[in-house]
Amino acid sequence: MTSEWTLCRWAAAGIALALALAWTPSDAQAKPLSRQLQTVLQHGPAGAEVIGPNRVQWPRQGVTVLLNKRKASWEDCIGKWVCLFEDAHGRGRMIIFAKPGKFRLKAWSMGPDPAHHRGVSSYYKRRLGRALLWGPNYRHNVSPGKHNLPRDINDRSSYLQLF
Image (cartoon, rainbow, N blue to C red):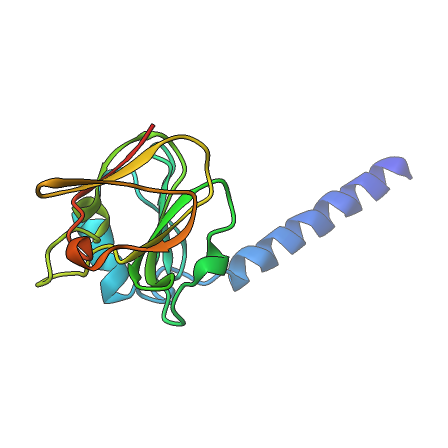
C-alpha cells in the first residue's frame, strides 16, 4: 500500500509539473522588450540581467537601471545606495549604484549626450563613503541626502566615482 501511495504522489507531482510548464508563456508569447530597454541592453556593459519589464541590473558592477513610465522618485532609492536621476527633484530615469568603483555614466544611458539621452540632474546619496560626479573641468562632491545639481553642471556629468 505504501508503494502505491508513493507512486500516486509521484504521478500527481508529474501531472502538476506538466500543467505548470504548459501554462508558462513561450518565447513567442512573451512580451517584447521596450525600445528604451533594448537600447540600454545594446549600449550597456556586458553581463546585464533584465529583472523586470523596466529594470536592468549588472550584478557584478552593482548597478541597476530603472526605466519607469510612471517616473522614479526619491522614494524608489531605498537601499544604502547612490541613486542618480535624469530630472530634478528625483524624477525620471534612475540609476542605482551599490558598489565602489568608477562608472562611465554613458554606459548606463545617462551621460552628457543630449542626442541620445539626458544626463544627471539630481541624486540621493544613502551610503557612507565619499562619492564624486566628474565632468569636463569639474569634480562635484556628492553629499549625503537628496540634492539637485547646480545649474552649471546639470546634465554634464560623465562619471560617478564611489570610494
